[in-house]
Length: 114
Length: 111
Image (cartoon, rainbow over all chains, first blue to last red; front, side, top):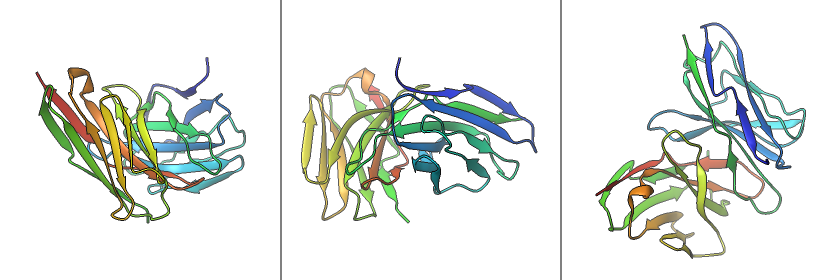
């Protein structure tokens, strides 16, 4: 079954702790993205990667870190420096090249700081 | 930096009427404009897209128009049905670059 998978679906974190959200795809897509979704604010780009071993900051990268060691995987770490980490996080992937194409989303991870 | 503005933020229409959602983008290099639908508790899914070499595209009850000069693009849904109720996002991207989304429109269809 091809697709993009995020885990876990729900995640609770204590203040001051780092936490890593998983994103895996078997679509052979080069590009992967992390978005944060808050009520009424749409999808805001945290980080994106167009190719293995390379990634770029999005609009709200502060307090987050990523790695892209494998084409299939793009984990997101929410660090203690992120002041308001409670949100819904969506990972996406797309094929790239000369023309951009459809982005496929994972089912999301809802992170709650307790 | 690149920006996509989307209006309105909420929209309520009578079942059977049309709904229109509008977006503007700032990056003149943008050449791909997808629209996503997100139902409650689900992931966003592509419903239609348009490239910069096309002015209009239709798929059954859904159509998208693009005005490159004005940097505007719009989603049109005709003969709305209850299952059209969802949050809709527009987006813009340029070749091999990041995808920037609008802030979303919550569409409600009144029976």
